[in-house]
Amino acid sequence: MLQTYAVAGASARTHKYGYKVFKALLPADRKTYPLNPITEEIDGHKAYLKIADPPVVPKSLSIITPPEVTRQVVADAIAAGVKHI
Image 1 (cartoon, one colour):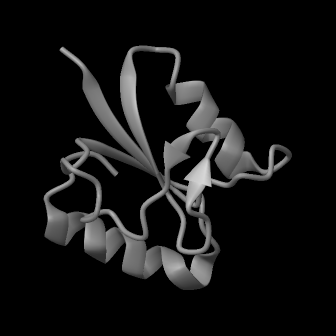
Image 2 (cartoon, helix red, strand yellow):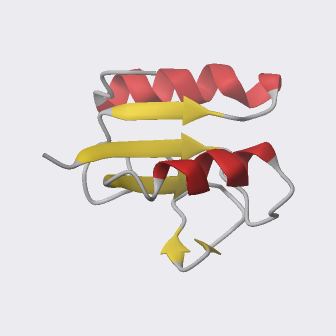
């Protein structure tokens, strides 16, 4: 069964940790959605503004965001029904 993940703070900049986490999840048979409010695409994958925007609610979420936005990311994930944060 294909696991679904999202990475809040995924980045198109290859030196950023958000990029590295996103790329690490891709080859392991995981459907992974990048979440980034200012980037439209990361390595050919459509980026989404928030956790409720991908076509399915991911089961798991990794958060690589600045502390001032993390609280809202967690609240949005809980509201969307994400099981693992």
